[in-house]
Length: 108
Length: 235
Image 1 (cartoon, rainbow over the protein chains, first blue to last red):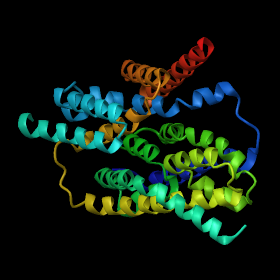
Image 2: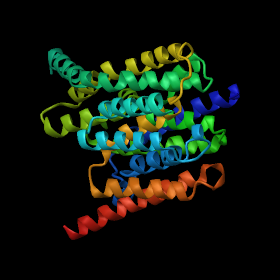
Image 3: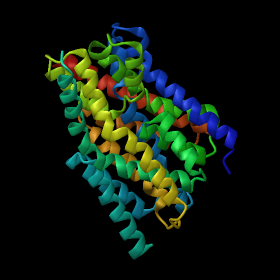
């Protein structure tokens, strides 16, 4: 069970932190540009953090006691393929959901 | 400047933002449903969406909450996902930086992937726009997007408790994230960053307190930045 005080601490902390990141330059720093090397690293935060977060969930799913499982691996591959080639996040989610639930229905 | 100029900028923003409803509505609902499955009530789920108003960071925090990660790991990981917002903020300074503080504060709060992407493209191309028109356009883009992010988080959270937990829902978050990342893999540097971060996360998964996530993210960022630097040097 999630502790309520801790949960609200996280919600409010994340709210303040996210606003601070968004306000950093618009509000305070003014016209000073970020150094080029920092901008270069910041450009890749999202495409680095998000895959790092989900890669273990895909390869070692808790629903299969942490063992690799073919339906989930196939689902991940199809979702990535559709997302990459169509550039359409919604189409990728629908395709991935269809593979996952179809796979669980027929083979699960 | 006339009021009708501002009005037309505003409505242009609304029209440009409207197609994003197709993405925002299902994503907000998914967050609400998963928050409810994780044991959050509707007010807590809505609290997340109002305070943080950033899908990927909210999903990250929710996942780590379920893993019982320490508070500082949850805060640091979710804020790392939002680091790109600082870059958005910096790149809008030339356009919105001269507005009164309350307008800049409002724009900062509503600075999300979609409002940023629309606005920065518009401001770079329509150079004749005044700062006030730019702000009106920005407010236009957020009008169809942000309120519905709140509303459908709530809808998802309320529905969530009535949806029975079937097999496969554990995998909704990975699917949503892959779908988000895929279109962003525009260059070799993006692909390299994503691939090296994934590989490092798998190899470092044994580390405590999700430290593997941090190290893997740093490795991915460094790889992406280095590929970009070399390609620029070669070009």
